[in-house]
Image (cartoon, rainbow, N blue to C red; front, side, top):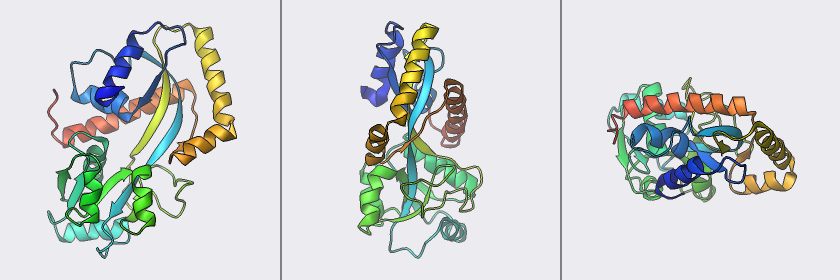
Length: 255
């Protein structure tokens, strides 16, 4: 859906709960947008029945390779010794990369300047050392890491990614409680009949066991995952609280 997924979510919320219209949900649609825009025509909790997560994308912390910073610990020490000196790029105020950065600097107890750019320009800024570091989705930075234009320090998940097993998590690297990943999951419109919901769920579980499906998700930079409807609902609740805190810390104006 356009407008940050809002349109797709509104259409899915208003569709017949017959199992033919599902929503591919994500952090933006389900967690961030509803806490920034108050006038939405969908309720992220009340209008949907969560089926399952199916992919998680690691966010990766990257720095400009000319800096003598080879770990999260070194970056935190440097930032503490030089308050306000480092620029942390993000893809725009209220975007996930902005809120992931705000949470990181809060939990690490460091003072840096959060600099908003338009989308991918944030990576160009770090490669040009106009900003020194950022947290960005794995698929968008892997090519730059391989080419040596960016140096990867850690991933934002609660465990290492099979795609980058050499990178520690930010938690492992010394910032307890930090978590920031991209994710995708399937939701049905609320009011769907239980037998239809159950059939969709068992079909999804089968699809997620298919090696070709898993390979397709990995090719796009994701880790294939699955969860029960209850686990997915709990996960969304945790994400909502985590990003709610980041939105408050960032002093974002609710529209």
